[in-house]
Length: 108
Image (cartoon, rainbow, N blue to C red; front, top):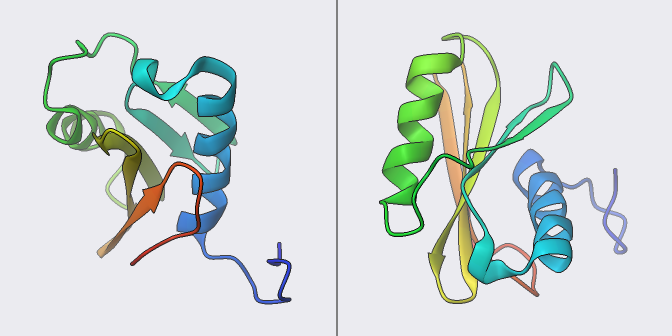
């Protein structure tokens, strides 16, 4: 997939688009850690995570317990009132980025 400027979107940016769609539907105050398993085409909301829990810790714990070591997995979770973070793990490679709920990626 390409951005409007013709550049290829990164995995983080593609998942950020999915997250933004979920937030538009459900609202950001109710956003829970969300996992994307690209090989399965599966998006899973970690709805057993309490709102007041450390969402980054909960999401990364889920990855450690449920994803295979070489499996690509992306997790998103709210970090501020209008920002979310995505962590991508693909085998030994790990990358992350911060995203505004309405804007493009700020870093990776």
